[in-house]
Image (cartoon, rainbow, N blue to C red):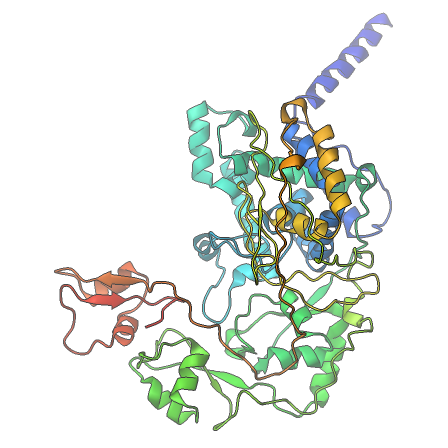
Length: 582
């Protein structure tokens, strides 16, 4: 009997040692047996990543916990997408912690765009997006598509998991830093795991941030946070189109605002959705029936514009004449410079459906009225009903500038500047920047407030939220700083310096609520960015240059007005691209 007792005691000690080594599965979730009460229960039940025994996890957990408003805002944003993402993870038998990765990547903003041109919920850079079949052109950018970008992100993460020897921590580091960089770091270290490698500060804090979000989602009550109630069912449904339709018309037929439509369909760059592109259009589940009913009874025009595919060498003036539109208007609609004479054959043009159409004054007739701003829309019923009310930005509070931490502690620094159109601007040194449309924050009644200026691009999605939420509540800001300073490990003490905080009141421009107009598309003003160009050297041909820059001979000719004379050494060529302005 004594031998049995000693054996059992030895097993307990051994199991305890394994749990403290950092390789065990996560076990801090509040167990709940039975049907899911909300989507968070579904997410929690799929947690399967190993724990990470690192003091940075505790630091970032305290950091997020001290900013409940920011966490709630991100969680409310996720309400449109997180069910779909979690279901896709379950289909692939992948850990549902990955459904929380957009918290770290983009603060769950589908329109997020970083300074490195990473876009969408999953922050794909252009080259990786192309590699994973995310279409990016003048008409749309699938990196911002919630469904397509999720498919690509899970494909990429699955590959990284296998590539890094079935280690999720290394796979996540690779997603942030690149698989080649992590592989080289492992070779230099002679192997080892995530905590054994030398890596940039951003990557060193990347996995701890995800683990911190997991801690809070696993047991929000432990950290004094109430997550918004998001139903455990789909928020959106795919709708196919066989005819062209304007974004504004489709939103009106569905009984939702254009803003709501664009939050589900941020990949579309133009005011008209072309059937030839076979678009996957997402509508709230509660709005699909309304859309189909209104569409069946609507006899007015569906689209103001249509697509036209130019032939190689076709002139813009001929196209304008054949479609009853002025040449200057055609160029303005399609982003051509005033000097451009020949259309690019690789890109469909946007032209009016009818000849002599006044595209600036069209208001479709017979459409159902828009939902009144003061009433709850059916399509909003699945959004979180306890999201914090928007905070007025009228009284900005001091923004803390943490010093760089000693040793391996996080090295993020925040600073605040001001600008007439930028609102509040932060820069943080340890994460990719994001920018985009104004975040939608819903009040307790499910109503959307009047739009206000979005923060400028930041290097940390959370930093933008922190400044926005704390700007109107100085006392919360100071308490948050004090809480983090007390709760952080000893090596982090002294990192937060409230005494050195500075206040620079941002200038916020008032924005009027946009009127719903199906045809009023105004292209962005031309930027002053330098046009990509190439100086021809001896021996180069149009074919070799087209192959080098990923374009076609016809497009190079059209863009540079090259006729039968061909190329000459020293000639300056403009290169096709989205920023081309002749």
